[in-house]
Amino acid sequence: MFLQVVAAVIRGHQNTILISKRKNNSHQGGLWEFPGGKVEQGETPLDALKREIDEELGITVSEARPLIKVHHHYSDKSVCLDVWEVTVYDGDSFEDVDGVLKGREGQTVEWVSLDEMNARPFPEANHPILKAVALPSHYTITPDFTCSEPSIDELNKFILSLRTCIESGSTLIQFRAPTLNKNNYLNVAKEALKHCHELGAKLILNGEVALLDQLEADGIHLSSRQMMTFSTGSISVRPIAPNLWLGASCH
Image (tube, rainbow, N blue to C red; front, top):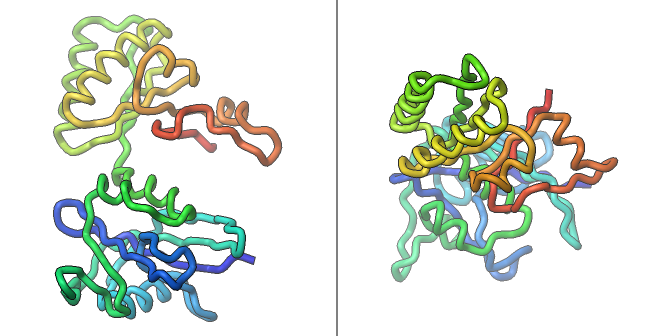
């Protein structure tokens, strides 16, 4: 049986995230975590989240949305982490003890950047949450071309549109162009990747995993058919490196 636990992703100024340190005498003591706690009998996950965040941090959660659910087996227990992104809240004044911020239960809390957060030790069950937190709220998929060999004018319009999209705030782009033949797809993808990285965005290819052998993009998006080729029964094998983004259509 899984222990039902809720956790909160609370964002602060300059895209910092609030994390807390588990007390040394607790399960997974000394590691960092996203604040939260157990769901009590009769509670909804959102009610539990609001209660726990108030008890631990003195923060009143007004609005939150589901982010990710994680099922994880430790050697001594199994947990289901129901993680919510808090979108509206009030109160973030913590006690300062010897220059260290403390929550209501005496736990150390910190506002950290994404890079700082990924450098901290977290319980193993939290690792998928770290990935989910790094994802932007919007994911842009490019429109297709009109033919397998687009004109220079169409290519220029595509690059201009891509740059405009990134400059408007999109940081994760999937290059989907099924009409292009393989060579043209790779040529356009190479140019798109250059502009994405120049402007601080990531580019994910769409197609076979082997495309990543020819272009060092930031990840790959697979069709459901392609995804199933990496599964045998209930066992799935990740076909790309863990530092790359992997997406799949699940129609």
